[in-house]
Every structure is written in C-alpha cells, then in structure tokens.
Amino acid sequence: DDLNTAQALAAIHTLVRETHITMTQGRLHEDDRQEILRTLARFDRVLGVLGEEQVELLDSEIEALLEERVQARAARRFARADEIRDLLTARGIILEDTKQGTRWKRRFD
Image (tube, rainbow, N blue to C red; front, side, top):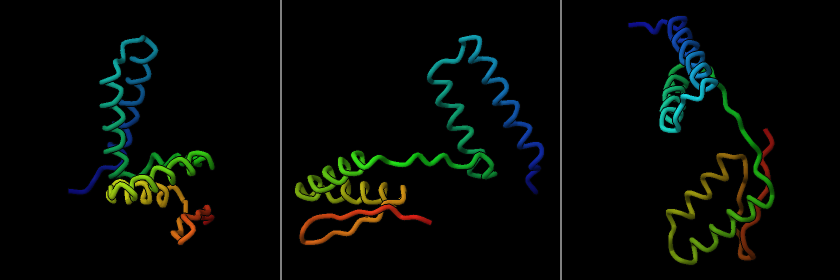
C-alpha cells in the first residue's frame, strides 16, 4: 500500500492541536508528553518533515566530554569512549588523537 502523505500530515496536525489544547488546560502529564514526543519522532522517521534542531555545543561542553573520554579510555571503558566520540562526530566535531592528547575542531559543511 502507498502511504497517504496528506492523511499522515493531517494526523500529525490533529495530534499537535490536541496536545496544545491539553497543555493549555494543564492536563498534560509528563508521561503523556514523553509518549507524544516519541510518537512524533516515529512519524518523522517515516515522513522526514519535522527537520532537525541542531544546537551547537559550547567549547566548555566539548572539553568536558573529551575529559570524560580520556578518563573512560584510561579505565578501559572503551564502549563509553566510543560513544562520546560518536556523539561529538554526530554534532560536527572532528577529533584527532595524538601522542600529546586529543585535538578537536568543528566541521563546517
């Protein structure tokens, strides 16, 4: 079956409208809010209409993550070190491990 995009977008619009009404009436619980966000994310994985909000990391946040990565590597928690590298890479940070430590720079597309 083909996806009826217009119908899918109408469903998203209805969900957002009803959510807004419920929020303004103070009847939206945190669990409900999280479920609505998960539902919207599932819709977006199929439709790709919500876009991405990319908030740039501050230098201090990058440095803190790099320090955590150094500590994880020293403790042989390589999965966590790789997770931090992947997070930074996904956020546009290029890492270069050298004998003197890790250097980083921002990727500009």
